[in-house]
View 1 (cartoon, rainbow, N blue to C red):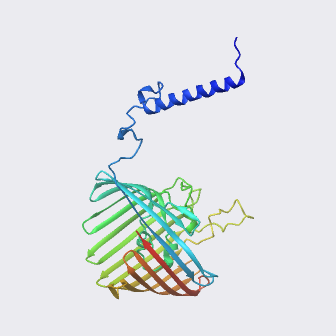
View 2 (view 1 turned 120 degrees about the vertical axis):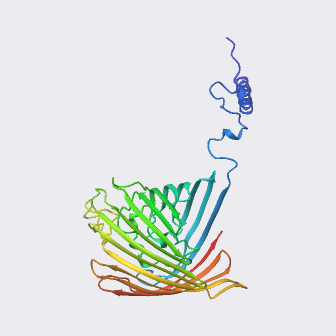
Length: 379
């Protein structure tokens, strides 16, 4: 047996490795030379070889940036602060004439990335579209129109906490419009608590076998006037014993430079059993704050387009809002008056400011006063 010196063995190893690499390169370039079992079912340059997607589909991307200044005063904001409230990206694509895919990502407060809406729409008829995925619960009109470029004040109305603040949920929905009547019916997992903590950002699976029903009707009776009402009910605890019911009614009116929004919300049901306390765990749930189910509130808002289509004034719109929320368990809450101004120097760019006065009534409420301002740009 012949033994080669170490230097020769190294040279032979390099030659062998180079040969294997060259052979591998030949296989990568020519599918017919791939080893058995590794050959693709279609040619590599065939557009149909991609696992998903289609080259003939166009995708729309849109979004906005919302930078806020918050000086609302104690106890809401003990110190003033600047905040990148939202960096928002949304995309959609239509697959044929009847299927739409939508998804969004939101980077909120410089700390949280969330996807509140990710769904598939299948339009079966002008009066019927089916939706599957995660979407805004069709309860509050304000919730589905609260995005920074379209809402009229930086702060949201006080009754939003009654309808779980930013209620996005996962499930199925059917919606459509027949003449002057619009509707939406959804079956979703439901909230896990009575406050904003009950709307999960991650780990969005249901915590019980009960599913929450939400139904809404919109009536477009005369030009410029839209009326709406909605109902939702479900159970929110892991054992499926604690129930809630929520009712909503709303109105919008637009005529010339005048715009009016109003909404009433009321909730009934079982209180959260206790506020979370590590000493009492596991009898308490970390999602619970001890919130009461029985709450009611409303807001009324009016805006007037004072100027538009001028130099450095796309529009100038002063706003006034009065709102109230009451904890009916303790017969107390908060009343608030807000004055605001929206100035859009050019399309898709908005500067807004507001000042609010808050008054407590009864044993519960958040008194104080303060300022909010924002710069919003969308694309």
